[in-house]
Length: 205
Image 1 (tube, rainbow, N blue to C red):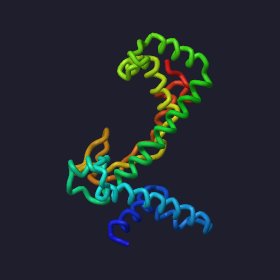
Image 2: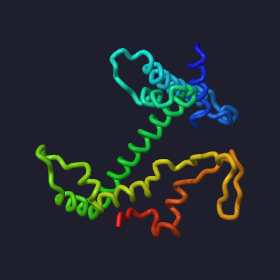
Image 3: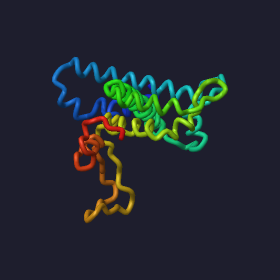
Image 4: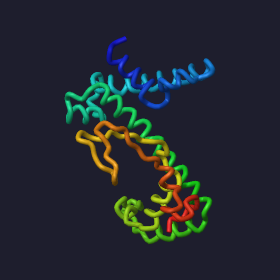
C-alpha cells in the first residue's frame, strides 16, 4: 500500500470522530470494532477515489480538488483529505438534516405553511414559469423559516474545535495561549432560554 493510501486511511480512522484512539480502548465488543473499521475503510475508499481522480481522469472534467490544487499546488495530502471529509460530512449531512427538519416543522405548523405559500404567491415567475433565485432570497418570511430551522435543528450540534492563532488572544478577562483548543456547543447556545425565548418552539416570527 502506498504512503498516500496509508495517510488517508489513518486520517479516516482517527481524525474524523468515527473512530478515535479512545474508542479502541473503550469498545466492549468485537462487532463494534468491526463496524467502525468498516466505516473507516469506507471513507478511505471514497477519499482515495476523489484524490486519485484528480490525476487519472482523462475526460477533462474538473473537480473541486482540481480547483484547490490550481490555487495551492503544494497542498498536502492531509489537507486534501480534510477537504474531502468536509465535503462529505459538512457539505451533505448538515444540508440533508436541515431540509428534512425544516419540512417536518412546516408540516407540523399549518400556520407557517400558510404564510409561506401566501408569500410565495407574490413572486413573479420567469418565461419558463420558474421563480428566480434572487427573488426567493428577498422573501423575509421564507428567510425567517430557514433561520428558525437552523436554530431548532442545530445541524452541527457537536463541538467544533479551533486552535488559537500565534500570539494568543483574549476573551473577556481571559488570555488564551497560542495553539489552545477552543470550541462552542451550537446546540447549547440555540436552546439557551436567555437568548431564545421558548427555544424548543418553532417560531419563524
